[in-house]
Length: 370
Image (cartoon, rainbow, N blue to C red; front, side, top):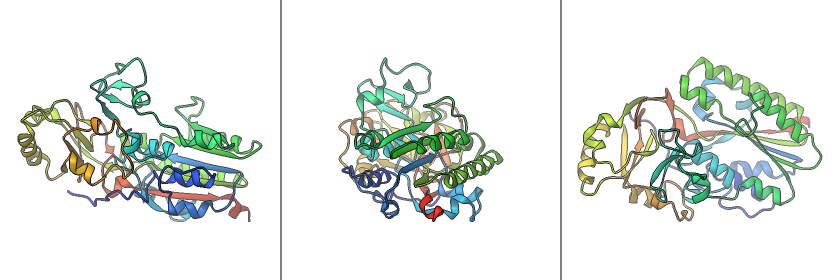
């Protein structure tokens, strides 16, 4: 069944958030800022914290947390992820201030024409294997970017990155909040970017309505609520990179008339497939794909994707077009298409409201203390 589609709003999305921060610190932004946040940054703060809770979209927030709880009572507004609504694209936009077409970190698995391979970006492995994609980091080599924390640091503000993948001693949201507090209590002004891999991992494994997700979100809300009361002269911005949707799954190899048309296996995400088609097979592919998946996916020629600027309005990275194939298959229902085996209960990446809409939650400790 088709879901509500949210087309990208490039002036009200997570790529705008870091540009509001750059403006606040007197640094030239890389793109449009986020109006929802600009008004909240009118004051000066000793500490500004951005805490990204992976996967905690609007629908997840409203499903699991009370309206009068710490998160929803401090909701500044709802805005959008980028497209693709996935961690690789969205967190890179947060860290770079760029749209996906500009930074070209597009999905979990990206095609890199320089090495003619699909690469699992964050793991630097060949898609579907544990084999290293190259003796160097492929994404950082071919699509490097200067991070917003680096720029803020150069302006004289002490910056910190707090994340479980950076510090193995951080095992929970309580550990993350304790580390944030430690940094904020130091002398001088601080900018802190913090990231928690949950609830995303729990959502993938257990589904959007699971008890495991509910309990973790309650813990997260309590921990951040306590932190907001312990800090002085701080603005704490809590957001997500994308939402989630419970899904059905299928495997593209089980459709030989379709898979036989492919020049290589699809890349990006099970909810948004980047498709390279063999010469002379485009019409056959289109007919077969729409016959099998037309109720669940929008099959869009790549030139239309680019014309519609679905991945951003900025100047595309020089490698961007070469990473894209002939078609983009965009999920409009609850189906995910895997290359090999069905894996997850819940997914993200596409344009449904469940996946695209995210919260902007703001704790202003000056208001609290006042």
